[in-house]
Image (cartoon, rainbow, N blue to C red; front, top):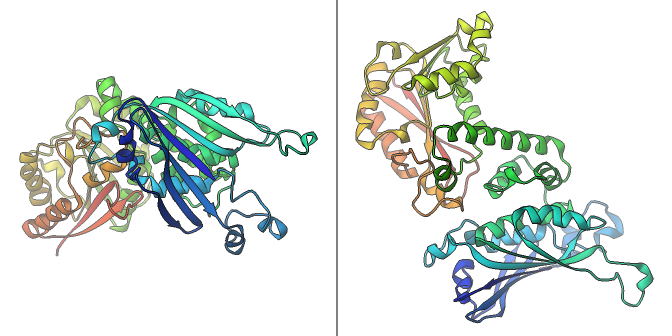
Length: 466
């Protein structure tokens, strides 16, 4: 199982920095299904090629039943050791994970640059779908070269092989190329070598960020990626559509060019809202204040819960409240829902008696939009004056930003963010709130958690001490 990546141009030896693999020596990596080797087949100023060779033992695969569905002889005689499949995608992620994230401490400007790259995927299984190759890769801007061969040179009557060697050439960032390969190689094989859980949805959306949503065959890609597991595919497509809708809403008020270059919204909205809703319900709250409600997404979710008897949605922007009213279908809302809901224009910087008396207050992705010097005023208004029994607050985890290849080094996730906290900074702030205002806090993660960088969103649940 072989994959090569070539950099053309000048100073191409710097490919070693981008891949974090030294061109002067071969390296071996132990994976749970075999070994991966990285070595360079050519190194020069104008052309450098790195190779990823994956070695699988079919006997080990059979014993572990990895990549096998049929049982019997198929466990021992199959194409798994040499066909490009999800094994290769997993190896790319394991061996070139830092390059996939777009990080390169020594050559960050190069990692952020569009390069003259080409890659060859050997033994890609296309079966009878050779036109599918063009349909998948051409929309991404690649020039495609396909090398076909007969099934057996001694028995030409057997016809052509169902495997091809595919070469892609294009002007792309290395991180983009690697993410394309990670997602699309398994799409041709349609057979994952590991158990697929719902966590795979986050994984696909993360690696498909910035290109999957605009691909003309995105639905087909998603369904085949999940090996025809319809429920996961449908959830992914729904979240992708939701993210596109969010982006459209935001670009009405943002500069489209800045939006494209500085912010790539991560597909966490559904998980975030569900987590906050569950925290509200677990607290036993019946009355809720949604501070910085925006267009009312959380409010809409909480309105449907029988436990919630009253919800007040507050935002400083009158135009945003008007949008919330439209999105909530306020004019045609059923009377029992309308009686639950109050929409108010208010600032969380100033004491407001309408903030008092609630069981719970939700502050979802709001605090990072405040100037850092104004946070003490917010603290006094919410925790000192309003004093809800429970406060649920979410904010981005700054450390996780390195996982998004479209974010330049040091860039915040949104052009309107004034700051973003690391996990330690958020923990220290939570401890300050507890000691200053008499609360206890529990910090939780939202989204897929990385061992080194944590989760994309961090949530604090503050409970008033009796």
